[in-house]
Image (cartoon, rainbow, N blue to C red; front, side, top):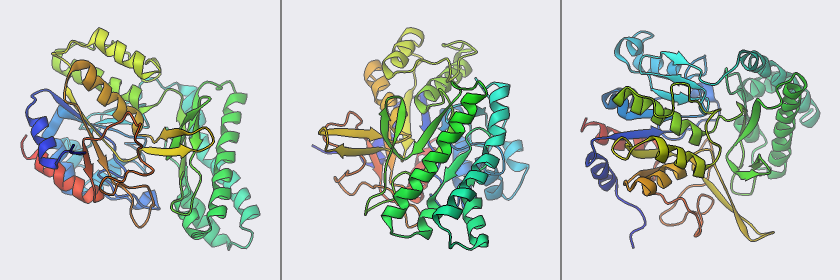
Length: 399
């Protein structure tokens, strides 16, 4: 039995359908992973190819559209213009901040489900992160020169508007292959973020936020499980401070709601549907789709991601499965089964010299999948974003 499809086979499956929606993650898929997120770059031709697909394409990312760290800045830099994208609809449409920042191709923005007091607290989070991280690094790495410590902190504190994040890639690289130190730093990162949750709770926002770990090992007791470093990889490198309910599978339904309303003039889940009032389980999300979306209106879905994990828990002989793309990719697969459509799941190997991640080598899926995994991949893009962009161009040339 052949394990994966070829790139041409997946393109043919897509082109056999008139009604399609590509739902794609960004970092690690079309944007190479780097230690310093401010040094990310996006390919100009890819941006132009996305625009050919119009309403058939949407991003679903835990990154953000706007702000100095937003993907919109990368698009403008790629086009060497601050006006071209707005004038021609070259921005990447879809959902960012894991589901609470929506934009169209012209960067018209909305923030479905967000409250003013939550936005106000989020604005203060990066400053608090910086203060706590400075104190922790002074204690843990006391010999670090002030200038270098400040540089590492500048990279680590990602001051995004709706998903302020600690990204420790550069700090981990500083301690190099001392994996005990990496683990200690992971615990520092987690401690800081838990203090922030407590601060939110103390001002009446106890149900507003959660911590999203990238990568993670799934969820236990309502919290994502840290992937501690091993001799082969760093494990969890980023923790995002995120709005409760902002998970990608709920975001997938918001994208479907918008897509179908553009086609039919009617929002199947209602005009005010958002990730916070969406059902919380795959079963309920699928039931809502079956109840509200007729088969003729449901598009063929193509999900593209790079963050999927699976690690054996030897204590109870089970598998810990996680990763920020696993949920929405699995939901796309299950919706395909439910609607009898050939939905496609595409995995991009994002591991590179700067950011170590598990990768698929041939049929070896160690760290990503396991023999009992429900999630089945249709296509693996072996050589990362560069190969994916080439494949995407081949697909887009048909539209």
